[in-house]
Structures are given as C-alpha cells and as structure tokens.
Image (cartoon, rainbow, N blue to C red):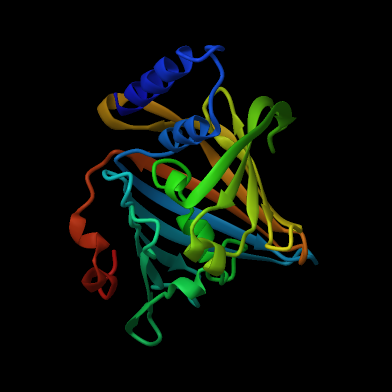
Amino acid sequence: MKKLSLIALILSASASCAYAQTYTAEQIMLLNEDSRKSLTETSDVFIKMTDAQGNTRERTLKLRIDDGDKAARKSYLEFVAPKDVKGTRVLALEKSNADEDPDRWIYLPALRKVRRIAGADQTQSFVGTDFTYEDMSITDGVVGVKHHTYKLLKEETIKDNSGVERKCWVVEAIPATKKQIEQGLYGKRIIWVEQQYYTAIQEHYFNKSGQFFKIRTSSDIRQFPAAGGTLEWRPNLFSMKNLETGHSTQVRFEQVLDQPIDSKIFTRRFMEIGL
C-alpha cells in the first residue's frame, strides 16, 4: 500500500506535465527509494572481498533495519564470522536534518567498548570492504533531496551484471550541504535507475577532483517476502570495485521484510549484548 500510494502520487504529478511519462530527477530518486525500503528488514549478509591478485576474504553478518520513519532510518549490524571480526557491531541512526551528522557507533569486542564514529570518519573503509561509512548511510530520496542536488542526464539501455538489458534513467547526484561537501568523499555520483523496478543497477563515484574511481553494481533482481504475504522485487547481489586499487567487494543478501523488530536493538546498550 505504501509503495502504491507513492507511485500513484508521482504518476499523478507527472501526468500534469506536458509529457505524462516524464519524471524529474527528484521523482526518480523517490521511486528508487520506495523500491528498496520496507518498514523493516531482517537479513543475513554474506560478503566476499577480492584483491587485485585474486586473493579473497569473507565476512558474514546479521543486519536489522527499521525504516518506519523514512527520514530517520535505524540500522544495526553484527558480524558473526570470521573470528577476527566476530562480535563487531555497528549502530547507525540517521537524521532528517541535512545539517546534522547521523549518530553512528561501533562496538569492538577486543576493547569491550562502544565508540562513536565521528562525521569526519565517514570516508574510512567499512571493516576492510570497498564500502565506506558514507556509502552505508547515503540515502537518495526523502532525505537525499535535502543532501543532494539531482539532475536527469539522459535515458539509456545497459546490461546488468546478470547480462540482462535494462532501460535506465541516468541521474547525477551532487552534494548540496556544506558539511557533506567538506566531510564527504565524493564530488558527484552518476546513478543508473532501471525503469521496471526502479532499482539503481549501476553507480559511478567521482572524487572531488572529478576522477571516476569507484563503481557499484547490483543484479539478480528477485522477489523477497514482505508484509501481508506480498513479494517485493529487489536486487540480491551488490558489488563495489575500487578502480584505483583493483580491490572489490561482493555482497549477497538473504532477507525477510516487514517483520517486527524489537526497538531495543537500536540502542547503545544493546550493542554490548548483541544478537
């Protein structure tokens, strides 16, 4: 119902334009956000990291997300394997105010201590992967329009990682707030949003000097169980590659949507206990 309401609203707004099927960049990113957000997400996440020489490392973690309030996403993750990262936990509480940093904490089992992750640390690698803390918190959509300026560049058809051709909108995202410009890693991002499920199947990241240095792709779009016995279409595989180092990270999800999650999970106190 939530998705149908938003899609109907955007279609209605577009129909009032000269061309009924012409969307603004902001509308496209709202559709994209709605396609990947449910009330809650309960996931087992499998990560595979590969360096330029082909050596691999793997990580397994549990992820809990509460998106009941789009403007204030709550997420908790806990590593369960391998031993060197087992028990590491990260809590992130996003904020709707573009001028405020998200509240992020990390629990390191070796120190038995919860440490706050400062906004200035958001460009650091997330536990050795090619994702940064900034990547984990970028939210294009309701919050994104407050943090970024979006521009629709063109439409084109590209192949996803599964070899399936998908017609896409190509959207440019540029940081719009002073804090994001100063503390963020990216000067701009180019996002390919496919037009069937509104999924971002490819994203190019440019540094502040304008150099294209990272690429994220998603594929294996499949149905996941959601509220009321419904099924939602989402990508199951994500990949991030650093073009400068040749290092890449692949992420696979096993998830269930819209299941109740105890609110105590999203607290600093729970970080010391774990799942």
